[in-house]
Length: 381
Image (cartoon, rainbow, N blue to C red):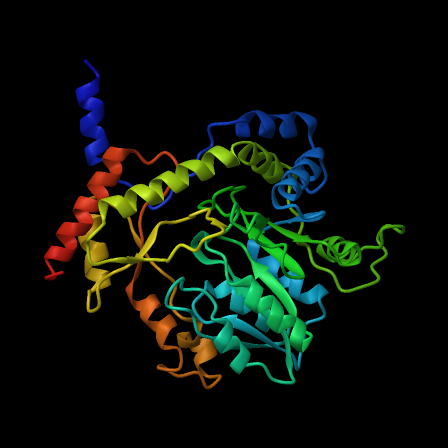
């Protein structure tokens, strides 16, 4: 007798872009923190969460921090990036990738994307290397990996560092190797819409024990490990709380199942939209994709804002992809003008992310696709 009302509710409720799954041990672990009184930046869950992330990625050193943005800044700072240096970064990325470069005093140098996978184009990177270039930031967008073979070859040839921004790519592997372990440092985000969430949180991973030691000291105000309240270097308060780590550990316990579900959702979207005038990131052989958000390119000329509004009227939330960083007021004054990055600008103008959370049902997906089709049809697409 309850199936009909439940089905009706499913067909009328708002479908968000993302909804975190907190159905595991999250509540139990948080209660353990509260009962122990270890709720701040000291506690066993921090070490356990770091160990779980290290085991998943294969990185020998994993350091928890309070969000993914500070993870990037910590990586750049401890690699010695600073005033006078240049860091090559894709213009098509979330703004944190770029802001953290500027926060060190260095200069972000934008590069275009590849039309196939929408990621940093190694050919364009090569053209933008100068004597001031100190590092390359490889951003693995939407769970797809950059061409790390080409980028690492460029880095070796020119003596450059590589920071991998893996905020959207936990679970992505290239030829069996997890992203974040190709360069000098990999960084992760655990924001509320990520594959693993701690509400706010981040992690840095690396192989170099000396660099890992520096990052641990710097994230804790630069305090000496042998003399309390003695600060022998510039530091920041980038520490993760034990409560956040408790949530993260519970999330990591279900990561394999979450990745399987996300892969199934992405596959079903592609099936439902086969033959329709939209384009997805091209899938490469030898890659295990984490498929964080299913994202597509709308047909040329589509009024994306209108389409988003039309789908919202159907109680379906979508979101545009990131605007190019060189178009932002803070960076446009650096001499970057429209037309210099044609691929990135095209992707940024046409990209749309669909609801992609693990508990999305087949009925939800059919409803989403039907709404997308109707919204495009009203524009003649």
